[in-house]
Image (cartoon, rainbow, N blue to C red; front, side, top):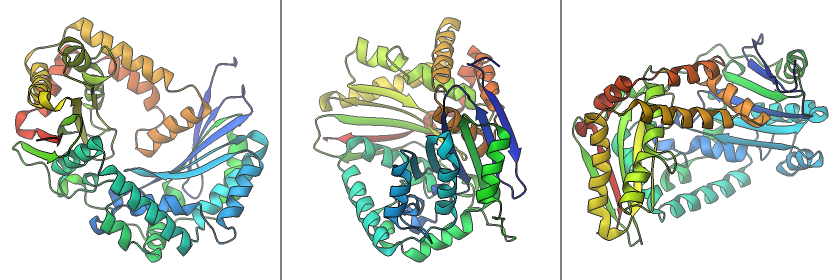
Length: 420
């Protein structure tokens, strides 16, 4: 094995934990990501929006044996890093330490995951911080526009709400809510532990089994929240909403409901968003900023989701240019449907996307993230090789077919924020 080679292993432990290990003996550092499936805002009830964000904020602030201060001292005394976070589709514990201290940090991560105490004073503090963040976002035009767009696209589906929740839902959350959700959603057979660094599979199994081996899943199964297909889908007519805000620029967002990551069209949509709005050479940047001077900022994005996702283009422009800028943004989408791209244009987008993908996997933390992420979303660690192959095989016909199927006017949602 040369110094630059990485060996990746996957095994499932007796209690259902999926363990992924990326060996990298060139550094004495181990980075770890512990993903918990079916624990994120997708599994929140509407009246409890923001619960998993609050849970993540409080989870490391006390356990059955340790106070918040004692947890912080344990981490800082060895110069390690340990934190909790949440997303729409999973809960995450991140860690980074030197190899010698890895067993200690993994034991602490296990304590936090399994036995949080949710101290009342910490809950009150984090609720107050979250509500202040929610209020702050209402002053930011981009966040206001994106919030409007989400709600138009998703309706009452959990993706339609902010990870932070609302002022009302956060204010009403109590300690018992956190305890109940923790008990229902956190179990070993939903964990994906992804490690990368100076560690082999046998050593990793030994440490993980020592700290998690006595944890077994309960017999009762959690009932998953209704999927998007069973909830309110986008009405087959266009929607638009304009929020008046006294700002120096107007934000214009256009969005469509599109397939999730496991859908066959995912790579095509990913390539399409790269071509349209990724970087200084993207079509939106060249056409609307460089050639016409309409945009302060312009881009496109297509988030990876377990359930149906959204394809979004947006721009910031001078208020007096808002109408013509919106027309320009719309025309670029229309042009995709009507005029096939050239082979050269698609190849340039492929090179950009594949180059960025390769550059996103350089550190142990990035390796732990990407392999754990693929496993958590149900694609498996093999998708790291499959994804570049799928991108390389996208054709001109694929791009136009996907644009014509999903980016139709009857599905278009438009969100605007700025002066009237």
